[in-house]
Length: 294
Image (cartoon, rainbow, N blue to C red; front, side, top):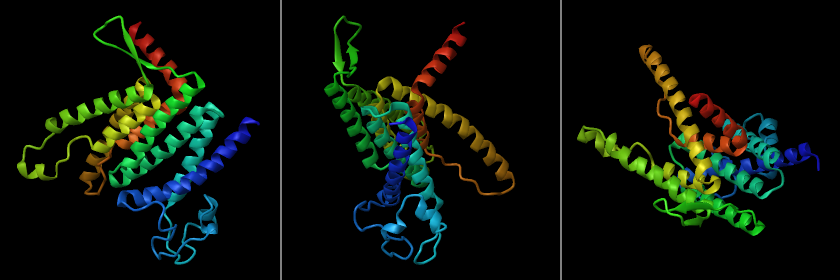
């Protein structure tokens, strides 16, 4: 099968998955079932027909409005379906028909949910992190069955004996543990001095970020996951400084500006960057280290 045909099929399948992800994004933050009731317009509660649910095309055909009440439909629905389709297609082009394609495609779908819900509601649903952890373990199991699993080796106190550990388990423990330690220390480091402000203080890093870190570690393994966190920190620093500058400028003009940006979306971008560009990022890092050393 030509590569472009596989990429096109992956895009169509991804867009269909993206349609389901929109249901998850809308319902999970509200603790609603993603199965019942069936898809309906959130404004008029009319149950949608199959012709209203064709990924991408229904939104364009209806011109972004509900067929029944005429209320606008958020462009987020079209964006999520398009983004998921493009991610599935890109992962296909990188990995082809393989174990990693199915695992990474499924994980990228979960990451899309994490990205949008954290950006809109400051929530990363536990279902996303649990799915990632399960996918990481499933990836190890599939590679073990195929005979090409590369275990993570652990040696104690520099001894000669080393112990093989499944990459997913090592990733969960190391990455989840690092983020838990950061959250623990950050809670006390950034605690407000005013007792009145402590009532709503939840710490510098949320529990959702810790669980998502464990999920990323489970799927990617320790080394690649740590690399994705490094990318997330760099992005967070650059965008944070930009937002701070814009906030300062707009505050002088007394214009409102959202300054709270959760860390989850940066983690998602970092993880997707490693999934799609791991060899290129490795070469870039090696070139940077060589430049710094010499």
